[in-house]
Structures are given as C-alpha cells and as structure tokens.
Length: 70
View 1 (tube, helix red, strand yellow):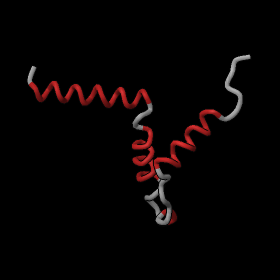
View 2 (cartoon, rainbow, N blue to C red):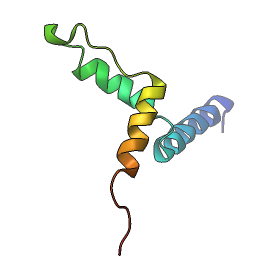
View 3 (cartoon, rainbow, N blue to C red):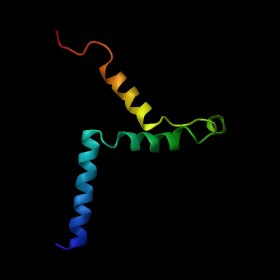
C-alpha cells in the first residue's frame, strides 16, 4: 500500500470519528448556514453563531426537559 493511499484512508477514518463523536458539529453548522441562511437578499445581514454560542445552544437543547425512562 502506498504512503499516499494510507494517509488518505487515515484522513477518511478521522473524518468518520469526528462525525460520530460530534466534534465536527460546528463546521457542519457553518456549511449549512452558508448554504441556506446567507443565500437570499433577506439574509444578507444574518451572522452565524460563534463557536461558543453554538455549543451553548447545542448543550441547552440536548439537556432540556426530563431525560429519563421512569
């Protein structure tokens, strides 16, 4: 196996690990924001959340309400 192929596979594996762990959530949010919330003239003034604001909102949504089975 060539060194370039091995590096490519390691990068792909690392991207999968980041996706599964949620480590890439902010980058995905920024991509989504750029595609869907800055495209029209109505959203020219819209700004994405900062990384700190994004994770605060994410944690608040994750832990809001009762999270138990009984």
